[in-house]
Length: 603
Image 1 (cartoon, rainbow, N blue to C red):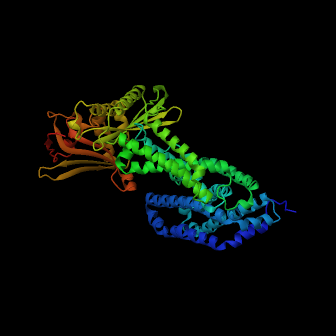
Image 2 (tube, rainbow, N blue to C red):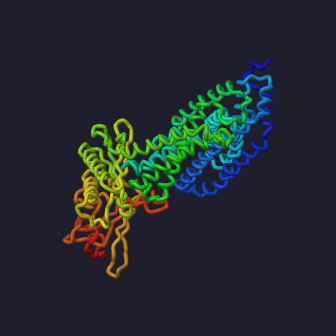
Image 3 (tube, rainbow, N blue to C red):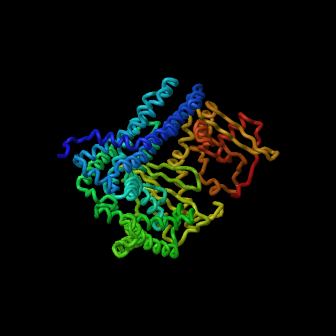
């Protein structure tokens, strides 16, 4: 008679006892990479007691590192524990032993799952206790609640990844295949999207290669991004992690269901379920084809990430790599899952199908079959449009109906430009157009454009006209207000520097801080920027020989951000000229010793 109990204490204890050296190694790793760094951080935290900003910065860095350690521990630990405790899934002798036990399949599964979770929970619990003396030493600065929060995060992530690891093991007959399936679940979708976008950026004008939209399909990668974006400033984003906890429950139930229908004597046979086997072969073919194409694109890194369109020769090379990669991916996957090299006769048809599908994908991208590159949102669908250009550091946010229509017109002109010949790879800049739609969705496009430097050399070419259209939007009342809003909205961290050349050829400066800087920004610079029209995005495009220009520039800096980032965070740089009468008058009144030198601006 087989036991009707859902849990077997003996099997749980056996799993904990048999592999105690491995659990000890995990504890030592937590001790070295979590507990010890916490005590090493104590002097830095204590030294910042007199400066709360420095102390908070040190604490935030520490807790960010702690959240990352939770992710690493859960991701790696869950896989190691699952592969260790599931001997009966990979070894025929262990499978025979488990099959002879007077235990039902659900009892074996729940006991194994319980053993693994006990290990994964116990180790961070002991590490958390090791952090408690710090709470007594530092009080509110190092709160016990933060330690409990870290422990809860570690347990939650361990459950998520252990459920995925269990599912990976129960669909596999070898540890290698289980490892591959675990990687597919955790990371493959984001890798495929990144490779596909890198390829599409050279085939569909405007598609960005550095944008990922479907990272939520890769649990391991997306969970890391959630922790990076939200923790510790906003605490743990439990609402964003909740869907993965639910999916993990489904994965756990699915693994139990598969184990109940699995033949134990099939341990060591690779992938045990034929539909999954075919799916993995197709994924392998797609992945290898995209990998080959990505490596080829990355041989010219600048063109790959600037979205420079590929030529005819490059297109043919990509087609060959797609065909070869698609076929070989299916072949290699079948070899791994079959544990044999004699598989060509069984999988060549699937290889040809995947190769043809990848070639069809390449052709569809080249002709933009779905019209992705030609898509421009309707004006009434757009809430905000954001323009950026790597020719200038400014970002322009537009939300008026007239401004949005101007941005749409610029994008339409960019699309028309992209269809005319190849872009010079040595002289190019990019214009980025981002729409935030009323539905909450974002549409982002990146357009590389040919130009010749310097800007004053531009004539009436199409690329010059596009740059002028961009500058026209940037220098409109709305664009100007957007560009300078951060500088004009500074508070106690403001720093203004007016750098000028002296008659002896050396540079000197007038510096203002705090209230003096704020008064200058609000009463002087604001008038020059918003009323006199100074601060053109491309000053050299509008300056002429008759205009008086001085060898002097006014800078506005956010001191707090500069300290945090470790370098100067300049929000504004303004060339002094006839277009800055208020700044010139202020200098004459407050610093009459400053004699500005006129220069003739020729670009």
